[in-house]
Image (spheres, one colour):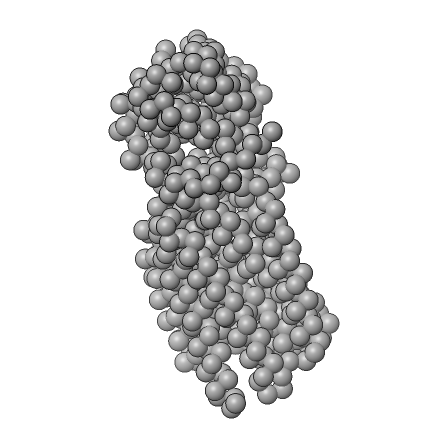
Length: 104
Length: 482
């Protein structure tokens, strides 16, 4: 196996261990935002999509790269925005009744 | 700037992004720092993406203007769509949106792997590790794509929530898994040179594998009941992370590998925590067939022969208003009825009369782990009032009234007492320990698990038949009038 691959495997294993360690302490209250936050992180495939777009040289490649960029961008932007919306609602005590508007 | 400098800088930006993801996730440990953590993670993402773009433009050979258009247009369309959906979604519909984002993430990972393979095969150099990672990335990404769409469809109600099993569906699932596996072996052998595959055959074979994986994703999720969707979504989220890491191996990119592995691992932990909260194994959930979905219309009494005592809003209001301690048990019914604001209004009325109010949150209340917390937070309920199951269970004995709003299975004592019950062994909220119980419920319909709840025939229980929002409004009205 090439040195590149071995390095990549080492990164992979260490990152898995970090993932286990970081998550096992999160309280159930935050599980939804957490899942949503992790969901945005895998939007990093956007970077991969950009890289394949840069090396594309035929119609099929351009098409695949385009769809991949659209998908990745939707994942990243939507994921972070919806997580932020969720988290901004967690307050220690209600300050303004902004969210309490009557829903009639 | 020299090429080497450029490479070093973009690598540093990727590492900074990866570090921000880890630290951001870490800050999600507490509600006080969670928002900052998410923003840190988003900042890391922005750094990684922008650095990649600059690097692509500045490196020798540069970025063709057509590729730049593809990237920018794709980002504007995808990002705009994501932003629009994320801003507009109602908090009750959030699990399906997360599922949709998960689907496209998996799809993107699969496309990256597929594209790299097509290029490599046409140039005639695909080594064995690359072939392995390509097929893994394409398969996991495709399964996530179709599986998450089905899961989201079930949550949205576009697809029936109940387990869908058509004749031979298991066979189809197994056949698709076999096709994927055989194709995988053939492509790897082809890369090793053991068998000779022309590039056209290899690409066709990969296409076949992808189609089989897409079908597999559909037939895997269809038989799983709506009540188990939170676990499925969490598992698929973990899959997408893994697919992103595989794509990272394919194009040899460290930030994809780190971020993907991070999400894969954290998603796996989360899935395990949720399965534990239902006292079921992940395998048992994935096999499916459990739970009847939202069966609403089955109007029959609770446990055999037990009679149900109906209570009027006025009587219930008196109980609540003169109680010292009230524990509210919210469930999915509350979410469906959008009653999170109504419950907070009632709670505030009670608090102004000196009643101590807290909320008991079951880990799988709602349609996503922690979903209920998000809904109540949206209604401005202070999070210290939201209590987790282990913490609140001993307190039910001291509660004068437990007010159950649209929760069913998570309060069913059969989970403790009846070994024949499908939910036997699932940790539940000890609502029946409270001095009296008021249940707001639309009808005597069963819960998601499709079983009867003997809590409703308990002599201490008064049933208030109403939509969650209406019932809470009636209660608030009656408390005000006292």
